[in-house]
Image 1 (cartoon, rainbow, N blue to C red):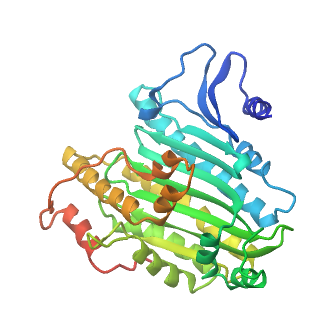
Image 2: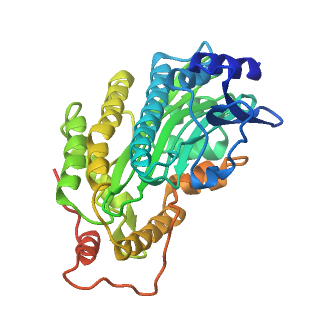
Length: 403
């Protein structure tokens, strides 16, 4: 069945006998993992330099949407299907945009462009489906990743206790069952993206959006919520970039509730904070979790507007700053700031810590957010009056209002 789906996808993607796709299939006890490699002449050696960024391609948003849709059952609702379409189409759009930029820069240098590696983690027998796309060693993106995951599993007592603390309907359903969580099932679909640019003047960006549902065996949903957010981590601070991103996010929030941005912006400032260093990871954005204060379709529309605001606000910044001249000293400063990013993700980020605790997790996907180059120096303090010191002073000072 998997091979039929694969070759059907190739046909839709336009692969021909003379320009095929090289691919690898690895069997597991309950599914398969596929690694797709970019279109190339049949008989050509598969490039194994994906570690430095070359090779694997992508079969498109509709293909990804259909792949996830196959795992949904008849009890799935419209919001679940809409969320899958949103996450898969957004993944496709980001892959396409970054590869367009890589082609443009590679053409100027007369070299082959770096492409995304795309891995499919198909473990539907365990209730898991994931598509991880990563590009590294490019001319625009030092490293970037965008992953879409869907998970369906039985709710265990530990998870139920944690989730019911913020969801009274779930707590009530458990109480009505005499404290038992038997039969309750968790479903979650989400997208996560991280872009670490090559140019130190272009900021790192991160976002993720997710939708949870808890249901009974008959399909009745007893609790649901949304979570997510976006934040910007500049290496060199340009106020206009911070204002553009925050204004865009504020506009998405205000379309649905005037209280959202004043609530979710401080939440991001608090969440993306490196307590040991006493400095923010970046200049923030928005962050929210356990969001269920409006009808489901209204909140999905809110999440979609936030997600849709990403490309129009971030890619103009990336395109502009990627053309800025830079020095080796600025690259060294970038590597130092990357070190702070690594520290935050490994020590404080809830998603990373959760990933380490999940049996059978694709740990490469969990750690995809980490940059390629990192530098550590003992007690490094940039000189007063320098642009590096200006960034550090901003990150160690009180959060600023950017919009």
